[in-house]
Amino acid sequence: MSRTWTNWVGNQSCTPAEIVSPDSEAGVQSAVRAAATAGRHMRAVATGHSFSPVCATDGTLLAMADLSGITRIDEDAQTVTVRPGTTIAELGDPLWAHGLALRNQGDIDSQQIAGAVSTATHGSGIRLQNMSASVRAARLVTADGSVVLIDENTPDLLFAAQVSVGMLGVFTELTLALRPAYQLREHLQYWNLDELARGWADGFERSHHFTFHYFPTAGANDLFDFEAPDGLDLARMSRVTTCDVISLDEPEQLHSDPRVGRPYRVYPQYCAPNFHELEYMVDFAAGQDAFGEVLEVFDRYPEFATYPIEVRSTAADSAFLSPNHERRSLVISVSGEPGTAYQPFLQAVHDVLLGYQARPHWGKLHLFDRAQLEHVLPRHGDFVALRRQLDPNGMFLNDPLRPLFS
Image (cartoon, rainbow, N blue to C red; front, top):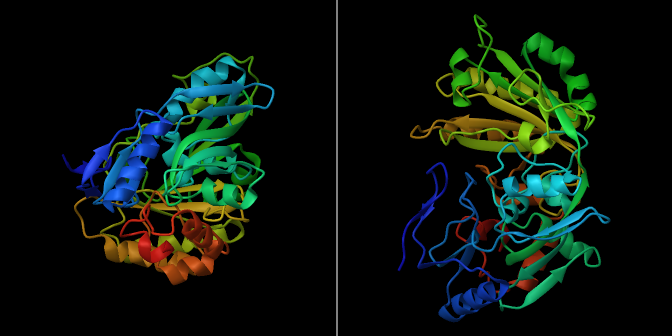
């Protein structure tokens, strides 16, 4: 029986013909073959933490939560093999017990791993690649129900699969590269625009993680419910978060300033579902100029300038659809208020950042058309060719993705 599916913030929904929850690779294969026989399209869904309509379908929606768990931790190779429905939060303690940690993660840890890597989820650090770049191998059920093994012996397929937005098939297993366990020390500061300009280069270049939230108004702080120092006027200020790697010997302090602890306890934060986010990546070298132009957009649309701008960075990688493909990036995120007609504001941000060869985060809102994507993603055509090879009838496409990747 069909029922309506809605994402975490309620801005995307669909009524699929059926929702199937497989708990094995064989179950995925059976569901794919049944959908093909019925002539239905299929999309896989994780926790629905995308703001974009990447999961929407009127065909078969494959819910992956029941296909979860760690299948292997290899201390010598520093890898972990997991099923797709495993959440990022579920990896922290088991990896730590083996002296290992994820190479990077986003600031939300409730996502399932397949959804996180498929959309190029990232944290912040100019030397840290997004989570997709850590994928070293995968098992993928394709449109005919067969299983394709992907690893470093099939480099083009690996680079296509690392950020595939679910268009190549359904992951049933993923192997991720790790790093030795480490701790973080987090520092919080509040900078005005002059201080931000002076501290920009050192902040991004010298820190393990460096993030700032710029508040166009004092009330913009309320989106994340940050606690600010008493008496500080937050209007046109930035909340700057710096995390540095420290010795494992230092005692963990998670309720103090600075916080000290395991990375999976320090870095993630709670995000209330009270905003809709657009996020673009530009060449880091031009990032400060791009940020300045986004501030000008906020000045032109003061009625929408009520939410913070979040700014982060990522290292370059090789995935075909990665927004960080072959260039390190400055990440600029702007948000709209649910229930408001903020499209003109988002269009203005898009137009400005497109001038900086921006690329979209696939789990966030974006306004790209196909010609624009072909221009800013040099391997777009290579991805499309592999997608057509694995899924010639476009079974894993939906209405928003079909014009961009058919």
